[in-house]
Length: 113
Length: 112
Image (cartoon, rainbow over all chains, first blue to last red; front, side, top):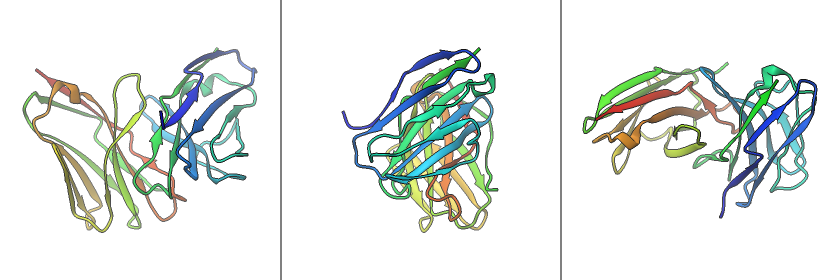
């Protein structure tokens, strides 16, 4: 099925552990982005990419790394997990500068203890 | 920075119309969107409007854009219990590099 696929759906980490949240899309979209959703805060942009090999920081990038080696994949790395990174993470992709909207994955619910 | 504001809660009775409002601050907005999020789910694009439009209708949904007041609204006609969800207003504007900037969401509760 065409769309944005995120794995895992749920994850529990201990403080200081690292992990990678996976995101893949099969729509040949150039734009991809990562958001985190926290209660009462809406969705905040972490990192984004406008094409393979190009990434940039969003509103809340600290503690996260990204890379974009292919058009399809845009993984998000947590370098040393902290309780403040407990959140729901969404990956999204778009055809062209967001025109006609972004397609979102189903999310990864991350708990850091 | 850019701000997108929404009221946090709205409660309506089944069969009534719902109107969810949103205001934004940057006049260079190019696209404006409404997303729906059901509990435990991702975001579903409901509808969008280009900044050169005033209104867009799609079945039960009507979007109104007042550029002078930087105000966007979503009207849901004949609201059903299945419409209960969080509705997010979002925009893309000149300085957002093609990225969505979201409001905090309006939780719509539909009472039978």
